[in-house]
Image 1 (cartoon, helix red, strand yellow):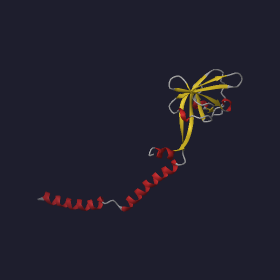
Image 2 (cartoon, helix red, strand yellow):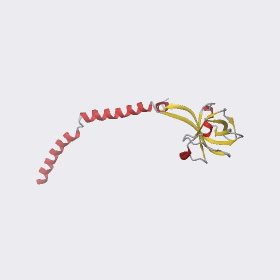
Image 3 (cartoon, helix red, strand yellow):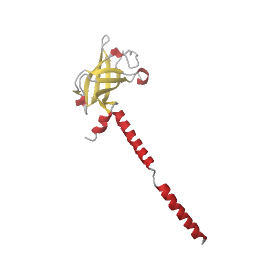
Image 4 (cartoon, rainbow, N blue to C red):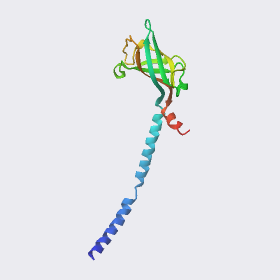
Length: 167
């Protein structure tokens, strides 16, 4: 008998509690939705201003010539090499000079890609700033140097990259 009254009391309390706790207040729904919408809108707004480069990675070899001239030859995969054009910027990082300490060398693509061995293409790179790095250090190259290079083909806005997947 005692169990019945206790059970009846609990069911009355739980129905009342369910009514109070079960309904989400309107202000939480309204402000939560507004906050979520605002965060997405802010993310899209920021992505409209951030530019993200399209790069093609490859290996580079720099050979010193007589005087202060250098020949820089780059090998890149043939896949995507149709986007490479003369005058595009190149960022070079040499193996002998760590990028964190010395920085990188800049250059420009000087020739159209030419077929090389395997699935690679070869192109010439014209070096800028007489081997002065991005950390303002002058490199003294006296021997052949190997490294990595990136050709920046385009600079798209981040929002263009996001929405290009939907086209």
